[in-house]
Image 1: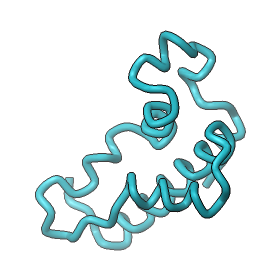
Image 2 (image 1 turned 135 degrees about the horizontal axis):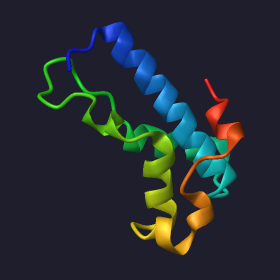
Image 3 (image 1 turned 30 degrees about the vertical axis):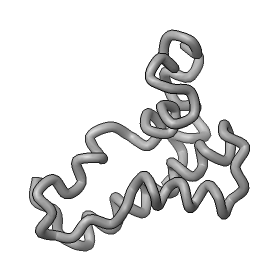
Length: 91
């Protein structure tokens, strides 16, 4: 996929924000720690990076659940398979 810089940055901001929200809400992290976790998971990739934006193939909900509960979160916490409406409403 070819990203314009504006499209990429908008997506990056959105996914970081959603990831941080999950880390605060479900992981109990402070706002500052949640932002740090989001930036660490979604680092800026330069426009010439060969797989720029590949991390966007799954939404932040999934990546945050993996970080918090591991790769069996869908089995061990089936209530967390789909994000709640509050998450869906985030911009």
